[in-house]
Length: 195
Image (spheres, rainbow, N blue to C red):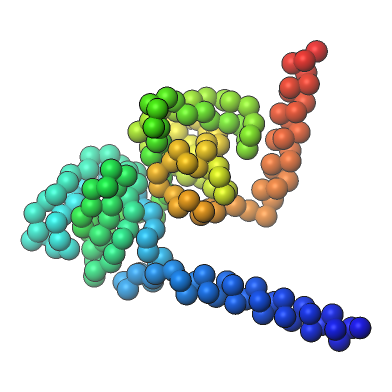
């Protein structure tokens, strides 16, 4: 019986390893950095040029004047990264002008503000408008914790450009406990309002 359980466990571990390895192999890796492509980055400064090609000899296509503006890296060539913004503009930027800091842009098809929640499916603590740049603190399958100025809250991931659809980002082991805590607090607040 013990031998059977041991073999079963080895089969399960092998199966999980194959799944993880196949996902890693399917990801495209940048030749210069060894990082996944596509990936999201942000601008380091308020003055960054996007060029037609990967050199200062190419003309400037777009000039960005907003620090922390998110971009998606599509290719790498030496010290240059081919990037795309949320409006589908693309070109080449020098690596010295970008940062790994994760930011996003709030999207809205109906031009309405988007709700910020104190926790997943929690109480509304604020609203944020279309086009604002937010810092991504962590993301689950369908929600992201963002900060904007002094505000910090959860927003539906579909309302943010700057993170992949199924990407999970910066989630710790203790997130489940934190979610349960806030769910309890929100439930108690709703009960108190009923009295």
